[in-house]
Image (cartoon, rainbow, N blue to C red; front, side):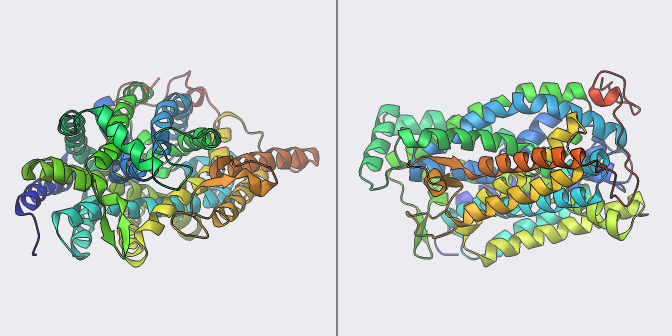
Length: 540
């Protein structure tokens, strides 16, 4: 334990202990009886009001990885890191209307996962299975990435070895198993309060110590001017405009079709709750914009990343900045905010992935007559397996590769958009065409990612999520977000396939093992009354 900062570690452990207790108390918070079905364990009883939903969804979307990686991207590459700010601004109006409709349909029919909706809407167990597997695969690296933030904090505190990560996720697994979605919902209050406190203090205090933002931006500009890379700098180059904008748009489209995002939405009490939550969530975008500036502050402060495996780990720049600028006790608070910021999204993600497996694999294909109690039990056990798998992933591979997996995850999850979004508004798209479009987009996306090198890191494949248009024969240095290109192909295949199949008189039919249970009713359109449970406000 030589080199461990005792004050930082002590504050960190106290705050981590507080949220651990809150996690276990979650099972008794807003009691509704036993958590013996997915509505109660996996969706918190579908009864979270505006205040809880705001903290829960905010804590779900703004993760420890975001807290560490966005400033780290600005530290390493400059202005391209600001893509996260416009995409979190445009995402909420884009999502609002679709989220209201998805909530209405899911509330009426008892859907727990996005694949439940796809199965019911399109009458296709095969398509639902594809959506479920895609969701699980895209979520797994996201869970593993939450460990990146905790790893960075522990390295700066001075703790070596992987056992603290294993202990942290063992605690996470225990209280998630016991309390379900109520655990991260309760912890989100502490997590977001700490993050707001740390960022507000940092954005005021650190610039004062560094002699103002003029010196901060000047130091960043000087650093990037001295590097050979043509794509870094405090301003975007002209060839980066299209890549930046498509990355922001694609990220916005992907954010709320991740299973954990939909889980947060479906846990809301009503349509009005979602409206109020969406109206308030842009406050987090303001926080993110301030948070991103920490990357430039780290440059001005002369922060040097900790070396891991002979390579600099830029994920450590924010913890190192806090360690250098703050007193030991407040650094401990900041480190706890990052670590707790990993627990909330990791818990929700593991619950969402477990629900996908239980409802759309186990119940659909293995135990069609599974009882609600059995479903809850299987989902709890699956969530443990998923968390264990995430720990193995992060320990077994290069963390830098796991970060690249997050970029791959965004490209993958975007291919579920047509089946979900089109299904909310029309039944015109043929289920087999949707499946073909999904497959085409997925294959094309993976091939483009494989064909993308990173000259800075020396990686020949999977070096980023920007695909060079020159590879299509264009004489240009412009790049586009790979996910948007793959999604465009997905939509084209879906449209052409649907036209061809319907022109040939091929009925959409159903290939589900159980009858489709989706019907378009007044409540599904959001214009009529929906069933209201006792004690709930009207969702209409």
